[in-house]
Amino acid sequence: MTRERAVLLGHLEAERKHVLAAVDGLDAANLTRAVAPSGWSIAQLLNHLTYDAEVFWGSAIIGGDEEAIGLIQDGWTAPVTSGAEAVERYRHWSRRTGAVLAEVDLDGPPRWWPSEDAFPFPPFADVRQCLLRLLLETATHAGHLDMAREGIDGHQYLVVE
Image (cartoon, rainbow, N blue to C red; front, side, top):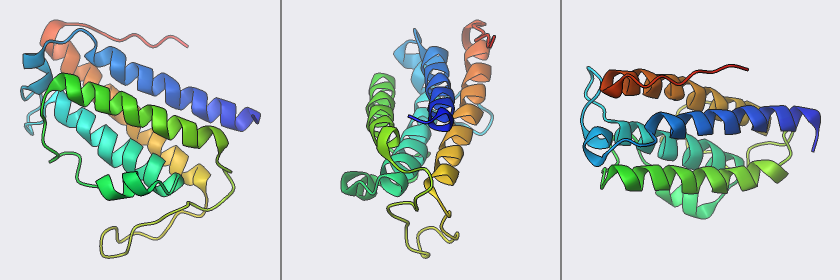
């Protein structure tokens, strides 16, 4: 593993752990009730990270995974069955994407790109750009989860690195 890959994957894994730490110990009611002025719940944000980050960017675009391609949907509007299922789904797809990222060529092109009708943006030049997008998305929403969690019970996630 190159130093660059190790650093990028290390940061992504740290942000994934941050996401899970922010929701750890919350009961079903706090995982599924609205916590933001726009009305999203923690489970909805987890669905967003699952479908719009891990499934879309990681497994579908970077990995070309047919199952992931078939699951693409708007994570914000994906049905929330339970908070526990949203957490487990996020864990599952993070592991699947992690396996892809451990072996894919960062300089190579994405293995799949959606049609312009579905995603009207030009394809990224290489996997590295897709990985950076996944990392950015995960880190951004880890911060949102911190704010939501602090509002629920005062818990603060301290980052000291």
